[in-house]
Length: 371
Image 1 (cartoon, rainbow, N blue to C red):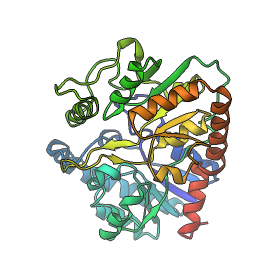
Image 2 (image 1 turned 90 degrees about the horizontal axis):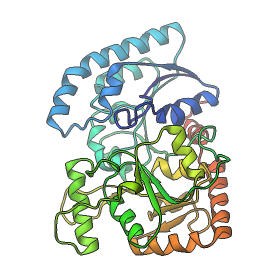
Image 3 (image 1 turned 180 degrees about the vertical axis):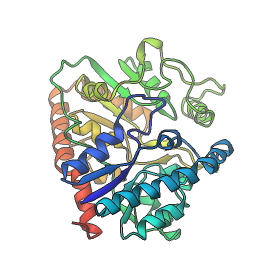
Image 4 (image 1 turned 135 degrees about the vertical axis):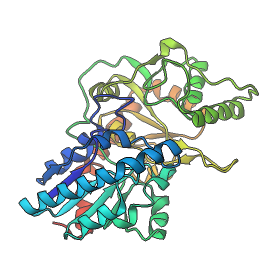
C-alpha cells in the first residue's frame, strides 16, 4: 500500500534530542512490511507533541498554528494522491496539531485515515476533537475504548510493541545489578530510594535524575504525596537519589545496550494521577514493556492486569506490587542467576514472537480490510 505518513521522529525531542523512537517503531516496521511511505515534514510536528490543550498558553499557540499546518497537510496529501494513489493516511497527531476538518477532507478523497495515539490514559482530551474525524483510531489503552466510542470515534485496540530489528540483545559484559532508564517522575524515585535503603546497587538514567527536581509541578506533588504516604514522612521533601546513582538521558542505542549491561531492568506502569483527590493513579502498558523484553532484559515491572495479558508473570517477566515486594524480589533474583536467565530468555522469545510492530500492523490492516 501507499501510505501518507505523518509523525514526529520522537515524542521526546526536547528531553532526548536525536532520538528516533517513533521512526524506529512506526515508520521502519511499515517499510519492512513492503509499504511505500510518503513522509510529511513540518516544524509544527516538533513543536506540538508536548503540548497540552488544558494549558492556556499551549491552547493559544495551537489556535495560531493549526490552520496553517492543516492546510499544508491537506495540500500535501492531495498532491501525493494526484501523483500516485494513496490508500492510507497514517498519523500520530493530536488536536493541538490539526483541525478535524482537515482529516475529513483527506478521508473524502477515498483514503483510509488512521491515527495512533498512546497518551490517552491521562491526556484523552488532547485527541477528543479529532478522533471522530478519523476512520480508525489505534488505541493501546483498553479502558479508553468506551471513551472513544462515546465521542463517535471508531477505536481499534492495538497494544504497543517493539521493532526486533532495533531492539535486540548485545554481546556486552553485565556491569550493573539493577537499572532504570526513563524520566524521573511519579513514584519512581520512591521505589528506587527503597532499593538503595535496602543496600541494593540501583542506577537511574534519564531526564531530571542528575539535576534535582521531579519534573513538572504536578508530578512534584505526586512524588511528595507518595513519599509521605508510603514512607510515613510528614514533610514536603522530595525523594532524591545520591548523585553517583544517577546519570543523564541515554541515546536510543545506549538505551538498548543498557538492557544487556544489567542483571535486572526495571519498569513502571504508573503514568499519572486522577484529578479527583483520593483516586488511584492511572496505569498503562508502556512501550518499554516490549522494548526491554525484546532487547533481552530480565524485566521486573510494576504490576498491571493488562500487561499480564501479554506476558506470563513469573515465567516471562516479574511483577512487583509495592516497594517491599520490589526489594524482596530483586534480592531473590540477584541471588539466582539460572532462574533469572530462564525468565529473561522466555520474555525475549515471547516479545519477538508475538509483540512486534510488524505483527501489530498486519493484524490491524486485516481487521479493517486493508491488504
